Length: 250
Image (cartoon, rainbow, N blue to C red; front, top):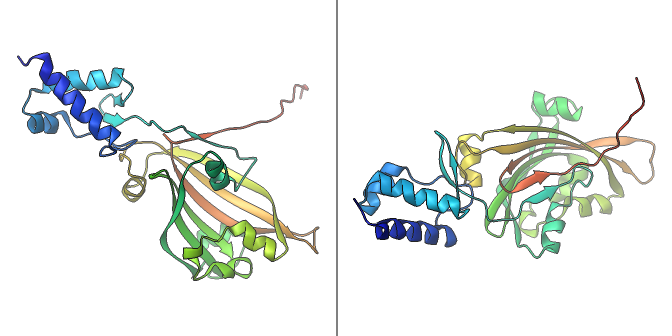
């Protein structure tokens, strides 16, 4: 039977890997068998070390699912009543935010699903903007956005300039007015898990967002100009709602 010093050694090594981001937030740790072989100790010793790490708040144990690095980052509160303020909120908190484009912003024909959501003719060209938002080195959200071409064509060829969409719209005298969101919780696809650097069974928050706006000179005509699919690492994001309660009898 190994002495407690073996457990201490395993705990210290895994703790150091977490602190140095070798194992990152939400990542699944190697199996007990793998760690047992790596450290040259019994699986019982590995299990005892993992329980200590759990007690320290460094890992989460998912029954029959594995061991995952617990998030040490403060969750970002997403308020559906304040669409479009994610980056500015993060920067006000002193966080470093990077938008990395997963593909070049481009024109693309709207398939039947996108055309249906945006209320446009199928195969009509739209602007596709596909990026991932990284905060303090951690992937927070994947965003795939489809925009009306006449409003967003100015984004083409300028990914390196990180142009805020709402700034571009303002220059065209167009102002976003309201949003509608459908929220779903699920496990990620293999590609999403890879991009967010999380386990294949870690939960994500999926948001389907529609945005409307108006031109300054035609304030009575509202235009649906954006559809976005947003994939969020659930361990780093939380949803916040305020709403009135109607106590009147029906």
